[in-house]
Length: 99
Image (cartoon, rainbow, N blue to C red; front, side, top):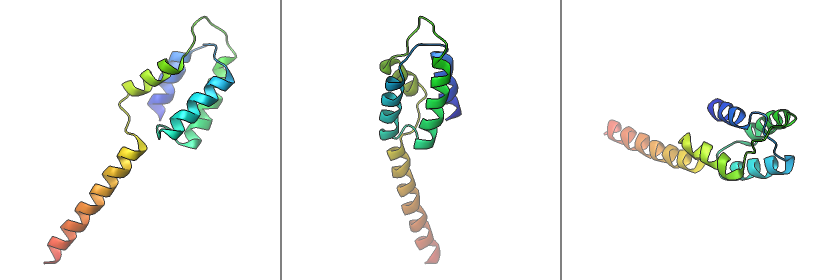
């Protein structure tokens, strides 16, 4: 989360983006499992603070997704699948050890 936050804040800098766009983009990221609700709220507050300073550069939704994708973050679903696999492997190991 910290890397994502720093990347977004560095890229946004003093970019001008609307609160609606921030909310929309963060909601989409939360739904996709890229952020938790808590992380989304914290990031929203930081972005809105940065939004008070105006510059020419505008952060688009596409730019935001490109930045996030470049971090190679694991989605919530991918993590859940890995946790399931680990649990199954642990059960198999325990079964083999008990024999």
